[in-house]
Image (cartoon, rainbow, N blue to C red; front, side, top):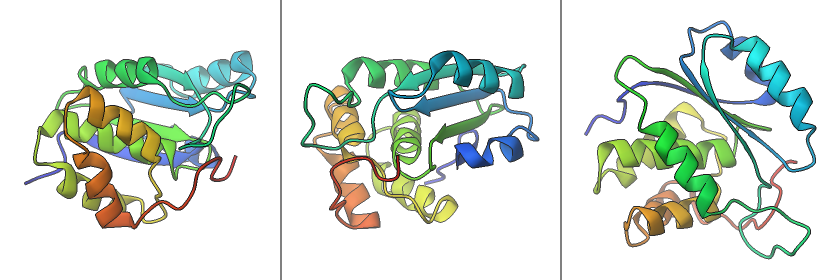
Length: 174
């Protein structure tokens, strides 16, 4: 099953200038809760003036969080899935988080499996590993997507089979 329904690049913040050299039509920009929203929205918007941009802010946490943390939640996942539904075969999509390892790769898996439908989870996880070998997708994001898309843990299982069990619970770099 082909895993590309649109042109996709995953990166970290330090790779945004390189991504900006591409004709990005859609960008998902994921930040942590301590980042200055005014600064990052202005900076990213200036780099991608012709792109439709979804800004999200949540911590890179999988479990063990408390009231001071802002983990990904159902509203974040619904927003990113709805934004992903606007992508077409001609879209040039960028997804970034701080390091391009966890939140962005889980988001890419979520959107691609939503586009490709049930049964695509393992192929998509393998595709993401091929294009972003350092990936360690956030399992909380994938658990929420599994629930919303009613995939019966297929995204988490495919991700664990492809990348190994996470073994991490929080802030994989930020």
